[in-house]
Length: 309
Image (cartoon, rainbow, N blue to C red; front, side):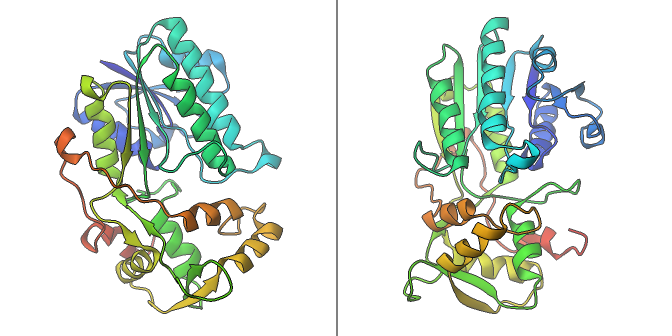
C-alpha cells in the first residue's frame, strides 16, 4: 500500500517514515530541492513545494492514503513562511487533489488546543480540521500535545532540544513563567508530553483501523506535568544547572513584541500565549491502538545529554 506523505523531512515525519516502512507501507514523499538526504532510500521522492500543484498531484497519484504532516512552530511572513500557507493552503491543495484523484483515506496532523479565535498557529490548524471534517473522505485527525524525542540531526526542531539550547544553556536560571504581577502560580501550567514514536505508531496503526475513521484523537502522555517539572527533568537529562527563577510573562511578551520577527530570538508572543494556556490531554487511546506509552523521564530524554544536539 502506497502512502503519500507531506511533511516527511521534519522531526515527526522522519519517525512516520520509519514506522511506515516497518509496517510494509511504501511512502511517496514530497521533498523540497536540497532536502533529499533527509529521506530514506526506500521512499519514492518527488521534488517540489507544497504550493506546486503538479508536484502535489504527482505525490498523491497511485497512493491509497494521504498523511498531511506539514507544520511549523513559528512563521516569518517577510520570508513568505506563514502558518496560513503551510497549515491551510497547502492542505487545501492536497484535499482538492485527493477528491479529484479519488484517494479516500486522509490523515491529518493537527494540534491539541486548536481554536478559531486563537493564535495564528491555532487558527490555521483549526481551519484545516474543519474543512477535512466536511469532506467526503475517510479522515482521521490527530491532535498531539507536546511531542518529545530524539530529533536525530538535520536541524529538526524538537521542544526539549530547543529548550536546552535556548533557555538552559544560557548563563542565568531557567524561567518559570507566570501571569500577572505576583508569582502566585509560578510554573503551574500543565502539558501532557507524548513521545514521537508513540505519535508515529498512532498514525500508522490508524491507516486501516476502521473505528478510527472520521474521528478526532487528542494525543498526550499518561501523566500531565507542570512547566516546573518539565524544566527540571530536561535540565537533569541535559546535565544542566537546574536553577530556576520566576519570570513574569508580560515582560517577556513585551520583549518579544520587539524581537520575535528575528529567527535568533527564541520565543514569540503567540508561543508564550499557548504555553501559558497549558496543553493537557485527559482521554487516553493507547489501549485502543495497542500502543505501549513511553514515559517522559530521564531514560527517554537521554538524547539531551549529547553535546552535538
